Length: 167
Image 1 (tube, one colour):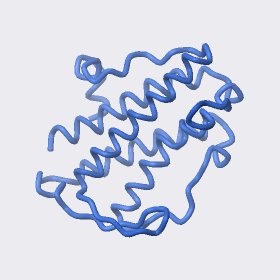
Image 2 (image 1 turned 45 degrees about the vertical axis):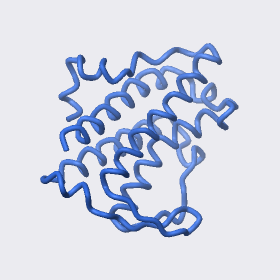
Image 3 (image 1 turned 120 degrees about the vertical axis):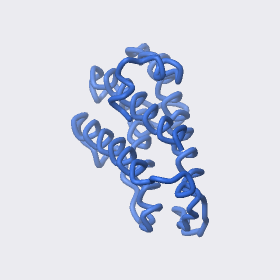
Image 4 (image 1 turned 45 degrees about the horizontal axis):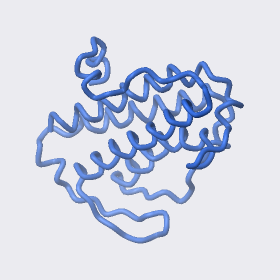
């Protein structure tokens, strides 16, 4: 249980480090093509996916998936991303017993196929999913000679003085 809480806190910390760099870049420079699609879409996808999965856990499968067009300014992107991180932290704090994370959630995919997964598996998926896309974002920043993101290595989180701000 502690590891799941730390994993969620780590992701919020890493996302904050990304936001601190991305906010320095004009939005137009984030609207560039990458091998994974538009960079701005990858950025928005990081927090949209958190909200979609939390909605699924709460029994509400998405009918509409927001895109970068729904967030015309950096301020809207940033506030929505922060809200998604906070929502995930508040969600995980509701679980008091380790076995609560074993709860099986039934949900529908975007193709309307029904699946089920445990809360813990969904949280692990969300963590890896965010890391994967942050890696794509970091690579695109480097390839386009945009400011680099500070280290988001897991061990850097555990050594950081501000880690408790995210727990």
